[in-house]
Amino acid sequence: MATIEIHGLSKRFDDITAVDGLSFTAREGAVTGFLGPNGAGKSTTLRMLLGLVTPSGGTATIDGNRYTELDAPFRRVGAMLETDAFHPGRRARDHLRILATAADLPSKRVDAVLEEVGLADAGHRRVKGFSLGMRQRLGLASALLGDPTVLILDEPANGLDPDGVRWLRQLVRTFADRGGTVLFSSHVLAEVAQTVDDVVIITAGRLVAQSSLANLASRSRPGVRVRTPQVAALHEALTKRSIRAQLVADDALVALDSTPETLGLVAAGIGAVIYEMTREHFNLEEMYLELTATAGALR
Amino acid sequence: MRTLISAELLKLRTTRAFWAYVASIVVFVPISVALSITVANEQNPLTTSDGIRGVFSAASSGLLMAVLLGITMSAGEFRNNTATPTFLITPDRTRVMAAKVAAGGILGLVLAAVSAVLTVAVATPWLQARNVDVDLLSADVITPIAGALVALALGVIFGIGIGGLIPNQTIAITIIVVWSSIIETFLTGFVPEVGRWLPTGAASALGGTWTSEGGLLTFWAAALVLTAYCSSAAAAGTFVIARRDIT
Image (tube, rainbow over all chains, first blue to last red; front, top):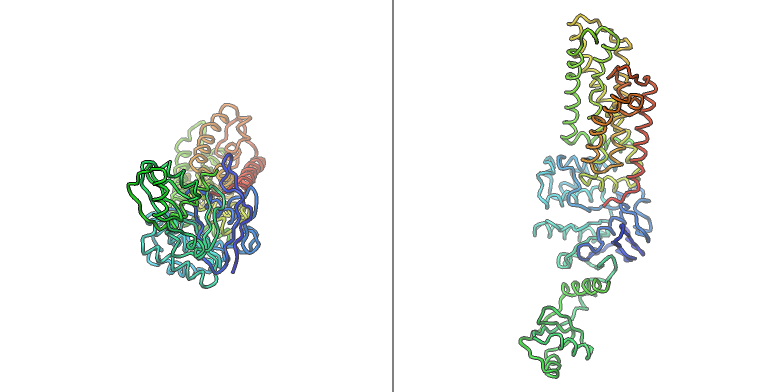
C-alpha cells in the first residue's frame, strides 16, 4: 500500500516549462484521475515520478521513496505510459517473458496477466498485427506483471472500445478497492468521472484543482445561457453587479449562479435585446473546461 | 546481473530482425572464402602464410554486421520505445548497459565461433582440392580465428556504445556503414600510417583480412587498440543513456 506524493515538481525542456511547481498527492485505496488538456504536462509528471525524466526541481515519491531508490520497483509499481512500447516483430508473450526475466518473476505470471487482460489467445501473435485496444491491453498486462500495489497509467482508455473502457474501469476499481493506489491520466473528464474518487487537474504544468470528485461535483452550479446581439454590453453590466458570466459564442454568454429573472432585469436595464434565454445546468465537464481554460489564459 | 543478461539475450532471440542479421553473417562466410580462393594467382598464391590467413580471415567477415547488431541492441530500444519498460524494471541504467555489453560480448563470441566452424568446413576441403595442405593447428589458421573471436565480440560491444551515443538507429547505422566502408577504406588505402590505427584497420590486423605492405599493427597491438575504441564507445554510450530523459 502506498501514497504518491508530488512536491514542487518542475521540468524545463530547453525553452519550455512543461511542469511548473506542481504538488499533489494520490492516496492509497483510491483512484486518482490526473486531468488536463493535451500538453498540460501530465506525461512528463508521470515520467518524473517513474525516474525516466530527471526533474529540474522538486520531488516525486512513492511512500517517501523515489522510484529509482525502490528495491524491486516493478513489484511495487506497475506503469503503462505508451501504447507502442513494443518491438512490432515480437510476439506478445515474448514481450512479457523479457520483462519477467529482467524482473526475476516466475514465467507463470506471464500467462496469468495475459489471461487477466483477455489476451490469452493472442499471446503467440506478433504485436505488429495488434489493434490499438489490444496494445493497450498488452501495456496493462506489462504493468500488472509484477503484481504491484501502485498502478500508474497514462491515457489508458485511448483506443479502447466501450467494452474495453468498462473493463478498464472495473480493473482499476477492483485494484483500488483491494487497497491499491491508482493514478491515471486523461484529457477527458467524462472518461474518468465514473471511475475516480479524487481528481487532480493541471494545465500548463500547474495545479488548478485537487479535490474529491464529490466535492468538485457539489461546486457545479446552475447557469443561464443568453443569446443577444449586445453580448459585450450585457457582460459588462453583469460584471458590475458581481454576476460571473462567460462568453460562449459571438452572440451568447452563460451567467453563473443566476436566474432568468435577474438576467431579464439586467438586460432591460441596459436596453439589450434578448433572442433566447435558457437555464443550463453547469456540469462537471464544463467546470473542468472552465478551470483549465481560465488558468491557461492567466499565463 | 545474470537475469538482466538473460533478458538481453531473450530480446535478441525473439525478433526476426536478429535472425536476419545472423543469417547475413553466416552467408558472408562462404562468400568470403570463395573470393579469397578464386582471386589467388601467381602474385598472391594460396601456398604462402599470407594466402592461408587471407582464406581463414573469412571467420571475421561478419564484423560490420556484428557492429550493426550491437547498434540495434541499444538504439533499437529507443526506436521501439522499449526503453520505457526496460528502464522501469531496472532504473539503474548503467546496470542495463553493463548487461547489454555482457550479452553483446557473448553474442559476438558465438557468432565468431559459428563463422570459424563454417570457414574451416568450407575452406579445408576446397584448399585440399587445390592441392594446398592446411595444418588446422598452425598459426596461419589459429591466428585469424582467434582474431575473429576478439573482433566480433568487441565489434558488437562497440555497436552497443555507438547506439547509446546516437539513439537514432538509422542515423547510427548510416554513420557506421559510411565511416567503415568509405572513409576508413580511403584512409587505409592512401594514408596507411593513420588507417592502421582506426577501428577497421585494427580489426583487419586481428582477422588477417589484409596483408598489405602498408603494415598493419601486430595482433596484440591491434587487440589493445580495438579494446580501447570499444570500451570508450561503451563508456560514452552508457554515460549519455544514464543522463537522458526517456520521453
